[in-house]
Length: 383
Image (cartoon, rainbow, N blue to C red):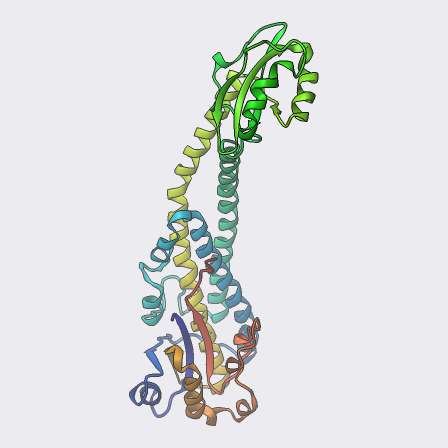
């Protein structure tokens, strides 16, 4: 269970008293949640107008940054392909797992100086994460094109004899080459029709060279045979072959073309391996950056909302709860009883989380008498 509830309540005589009350209500008498203090530094408050405007902007920025965090995580899973089970160990923030980072959150003073205004800090985060988003699009596009081209070539070299590339099956000596009159054709024959082929191929058209057929390759369903005939009989032979359920492949032996295809395959495979390491490193670094930025936005939102709700001077305790999954409803009730005196209007609002309406996500629209934001560290949507 990696869902957290980030809440705040006004300081009693001291903020420590607010913390102690929460601990008594949620952990000491019953096991409703695991709690940590969430440290938010003394940020610049600014004017009420700015705070109200910033509250809306931060909600949008929160959603945007969360989407980028999820995109980077999901693309990491896509790139690691067969190692998807290892994805989680690569999704770290500041070198530690996400739960550890969130529960031990410390504001990054170097990245987000608290002497700056709240608006400036939010703009720094917005610019930073927009850059990650743009870079991800460019890198993903380049890598996906390379991967797609390689997969197309690999598909050509696999599958049914009716469609696959024959370059790695045939050899020069299988063909009559450079003849003005004769040509060697390749025919796909279903295994159940081998006897028919041997019995009839010489009579499918005039001018078929007797005893010129050889079996070159078999897959599960069919075999690939050569047959040599005069060029003028090609159309007639192709038509009669189709009537007998034999498929003539359009193929001309071209050594240079086949060599170029093999070289292209090697080049793409080498390029993919070369790009893989740096791309995974970039994803790890920028996932960490985006996730850290996201948690700082949560901290900003708690600060702004707490000042708007509880007033000045700034006096509130931010707390991070990791609910016990079985007791989430009970935890909501306990928190409501603890903080209902803060806002009587919240009493009339139905707790949407208890309704469990399939497909309806009202988490950001929920309203409680205390400041509340959800942090969900389940970032991957594994199919």
